Length: 123
Image (cartoon, rainbow, N blue to C red; front, side, top):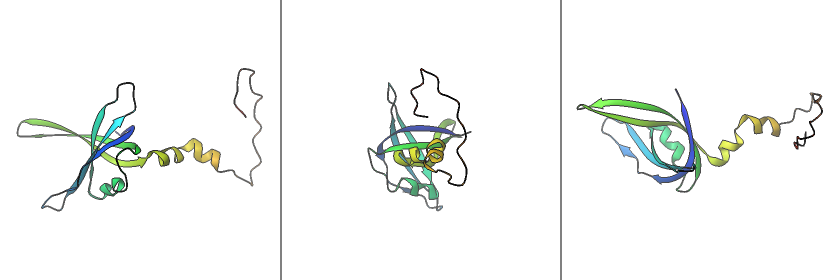
């Protein structure tokens, strides 16, 4: 099951390399809610490249999974980020904007129903 969260990058930590060849990088975002939360995410292996060009203060959309494990009778939860999009590209990649920005010249426009009096939309 995947989740997503929007916010601004608060901190990006240095990459951690392990003897096995595994590497990860963690970062924290501050959510943009009434009561903002600082949430830490982890990127692993090649996904660390997604945050390489980001800096503190950048708006992002993080898509992630929740991972949990037990070690020495203690339980841990990790938010595994599998996609990190900058705030600008997250808006540009939304399906509604992509359809509106790409007209199809060979297809005649579809007839639309007349707008209601209380509707202030331009179409």
